Figure: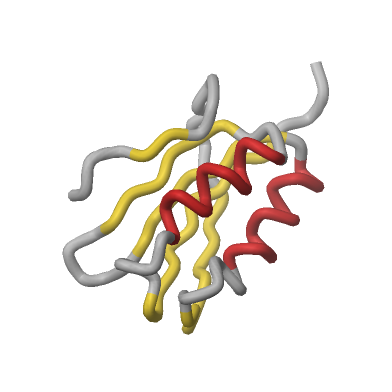
Length: 94
């Protein structure tokens, strides 16, 4: 089995109400990543991405730009121990 990397990301800025979660699903699925994303009450989008290290790193970089209408202020990344399986999905907002 090839090496996998899982990360937890918190994305701040104008990232809610701009299609960020739908964009994340398309971007993560294009990279064959598993995990999840959701909105938080404070306006942050959080996500977990798991997959090949290069694909995860590429996804982190993509999140720094986000979709067209987003204005990303920061992307905080921490290594994650859980390993979600299956397609990337959106969870209910917390």
